[in-house]
Amino acid sequence: MGNMSTVVGDGGRSVVKERVDEAMDTTQVAMHGGIKTVGVEQLCDFSGNSVLCMSIVTWNMNGKVSDEDLAELVGDNRKFDLLVVGLQEVPRCNVAQLLQETLAETHSILGKAIMQSLQLFVFGPKNSEHFINGIKVDKHALGGFGGLIRRKKGAVAVSLSYKGIRMVFISCHLSAHAHNVEVRNSQFRHISHSLFSKNQNPYARPSHITVWLGDLNYRIHGIDMLPAKRLIKKNLHGMLTSKDQLLQEAERGQIFNGYSEGTLAFKPTYKYNIGTNNYDTSYKVRVPSWTDRILFKIEEFGNVDASLHSYESMDNIHSSDHKPVKAHLCLKVQKLEQSTPS
Image (cartoon, rainbow, N blue to C red; front, top):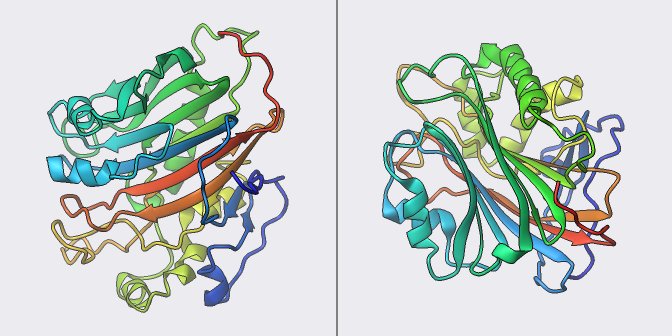
């Protein structure tokens, strides 16, 4: 697997890089309070029995779906163990079946969690069921419907052990609008405390890794739409990270303490004119924002290291006002204790 570096932060003080060239450098490592921003390691040779590679995707579908988009979402390169797909604003159709048909030659579904339009799927290589144990699912609903019936807010989660590595995946859709930042902070805390809390086994071992993905809805704040668009057009969107509410709130110690995230080298993923790569020109005047995110936390007790090999938006998908975001995350096990069902 080559040299894989641990990407877990120690909770130290943040280092804010203001120069544009540094902000856009994907090898940069910076601290934002509880979040450690990590660079992308280009090589992933997918070798060794102790390595687990995951492709993780989040997408707000805006109530629409096509076979072409799902094929693009999954991709042709299937050099991963697990595929984790978190979807928000899913239309009234069997997306799980559509994904399974797309993946039929290589992967099968291992676990799923569904709460109306909020859905999460975990796929593994065919005939890999014997590597899996302890699958659990849970969900946490938030009040309101996001303005439209079935567009549910909250979180769904899948917990499982794969080859002895205990993992939790949480896909969420938090409250919208820039002024609701404290509401989102509160929702994050409630979801964190409530998932898998019912009938919890006090002797169960905690997970080695927790992955949060979804439409977290944190916005770029403190700059108007036109100046933000001008920076993005000049490929200077790295200057906007200092105005990102998620990083700001993490720096305040409000959310995601101990988590890591890839560098935001891609353009903000919301809000687009549907069918285009052009940002919103409607009367709503939305400031482009990185609403769609993937973050992960490695627990310090374990002997698991992680390396990030991509963190990007999928700009070839145009059917939603959001762009999907995909990460390629690999785990290396130094020494794993004997696995027992929890």
